[in-house]
Length: 391
Image (cartoon, rainbow, N blue to C red; front, side, top):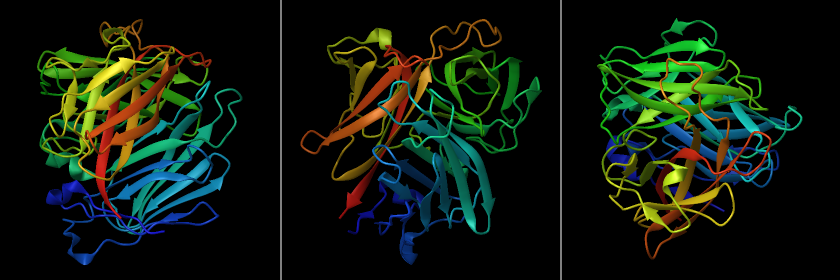
């Protein structure tokens, strides 16, 4: 079977994807894009993968802006993703897939960039035993394309115990802008400062992932203006929900996960669970919300605790592959400098996605749980990328 993907973002030089062949070893391989793809350079690139939801070697969604992507399950709970023609330093986000009770944990353990390409390693654990275990996850890796769109940022913390540091692996909307800083406030509590930034009152969606070889996860507690800056709060936890120091990767965008702010197949929303009922409600003009096709998206609480849906209105214009990422969002946030006010330790994960070519809608299911696995209504941010598919 051969599937070829074409990116709607070719205006920015992203190539299409590629022949798919999944071997019994769990290796997924994509052929190189045609030479006329027009990629601007090796530092510009991205890839995304949805993997292992139903079985340890199943690929649900995969896409790369250029070159070859290989996905290998090296052992139980350990995976290596290699993009041979994406060589720029970048930011990796990973989110575990649902359903699950309790949800497993998946982290990026290492990222290496060389002339041979980019290699990202992922490890997953059981939330019950803490031992490595196969799990489904979505991973998104993006390089310096962040500098091509307005108000788009990414930062990878490089020290989890110092009071303050300036990470070197970061991307800013304006390359000449002052760098982002990360300040440790207390165990597992961090403040990220965006200097001289002024997100609009309903702008900016953020995503965060724990980084490292121990089972950890990180949540957003909130973000708000602080004089001429914007500050965000990140809290990190052990698998049981106790706050713990951790490295993390954070993305902030006023557009899509990939940095696009103009028309295109994408969706970014912040969903406050308290603002929705079982009746579908539309995101208003003052909500944190972006739709690449200008649709009026909606959300609803489904008929069981912890389960909700987000409907992207008019985001599907034809057959498409769909990629979704979720970050849990806490609501105990009062002020980032105060360690006592942290995010909740709830965890949320994307479930199945359905598309309707007739209406152009895409429906994203999200399930949220306490650390011990009880369903719970919770707030979260959801980002989706939709890439047209040509069979």
